Length: 270
Ligand SMILES: NC(=O)c1ccc[n+]([C@@H]2O[C@H](COP(=O)([O-])OP(=O)(O)OC[C@H]3O[C@@H](n4cnc5c(N)ncnc54)[C@H](OP(=O)(O)O)[C@@H]3O)[C@@H](O)[C@H]2O)c1
Image (cartoon, rainbow, N blue to C red):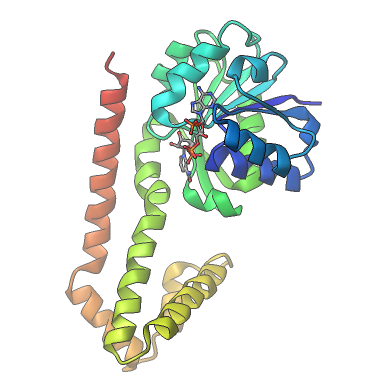
């Protein structure tokens, strides 16, 4: 049985373990290192059978896979605390946003490392993540990382150079959609609807549209299907296009990717 250690029992660590449990993983094969005693109590109740420990070193001793789910700023400390006990074969999968493979490998020399870029819908089992292999990671390691992250959403494999684009698209993407949702609620209020009603209608519209997007039809085909000639949607879309919404998204994602590159460069500078 594969032994898994999760460093950091915060939101992402908890979401991952609960996804793995729902996917049939035996909690007895999972150890979670969490510094905060209050949080450890919560995790013990939530995951009976899992080992919830206060130190990374206790969690990783017999681990085949170590998932790093602490804040980016704590990655060095968590890996340093594990270094002496970690086996040479243990695979390290880092979820820490913006921490480059070079930095991770600096903390875990000669070990297989996979860097992942997950997003917040992983917290509800609908994440979109990309994974990139480090210098010593094989396709078997990538498969193992996919097996873990696949418990909370979809996973694509990419070289690390594409992770800035992934950060900009699916990492920050939920925020773009939340902004659109906020704006639509305001638009509903302006059009005369009660705020609660507008809020309910917008949330359900997003959920319904997301289900349609999960089907085989392309976003363009779905949009065309609700755009009757000379109709209300066509009138609205003309305004959005005239205001440059499409161009704004292109510029926004490019800006986020550039910012991700800057932050990655700063994190790589000793
Ligand atoms: N949340 C998301 O949707 C999301 C999306 C993309 C990427 N990520 C990445 O996932 C990682 C985790 O994010 P999160 O939202 O789950 O953060 P979080 O809720 O703050 O969880 C991190 C947890 O790790 C604990 N911790 C810190 N240092 C530790 C150490 N040395 N050993 C053991 N435990 C330690 C923290 O305890 P204390 O509170 O006591 O410090 C905290 O409970 C981050 O690197 C983030 O970039 C998260």
